[in-house]
Image 1 (cartoon, rainbow, N blue to C red):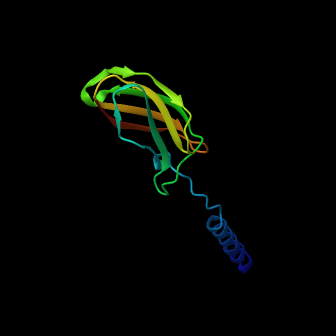
Image 2 (image 1 turned 135 degrees about the vertical axis):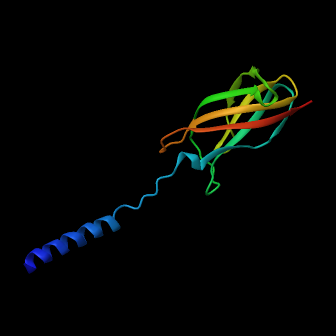
Length: 135
């Protein structure tokens, strides 16, 4: 009987050790990433550059090499979703910074909608940022 008890105790100890000593990889959550406007205001006119930074919320560090696959710029904050303009990606100057050229045809609030994939993460980072265009 003592051999059976010893065997059970040993098995329980090994299972406990395996659970306690297993890999402690902390998986990040896609909600830990966000886009931030570098400059929240812009002058109206053609070929204006807007830049955003993709950062990890906890550390504040920029996230380079994300794949931005969804972009839209419209006047939804002022109730004019149909007033959209084309965004053209332009090279950025810093890692984690993403820039676009756009035509801000009128003054008001413009909504920049972005969707991106972060390497090594599942899911999509989606943000809607408001830019104020002034004359």
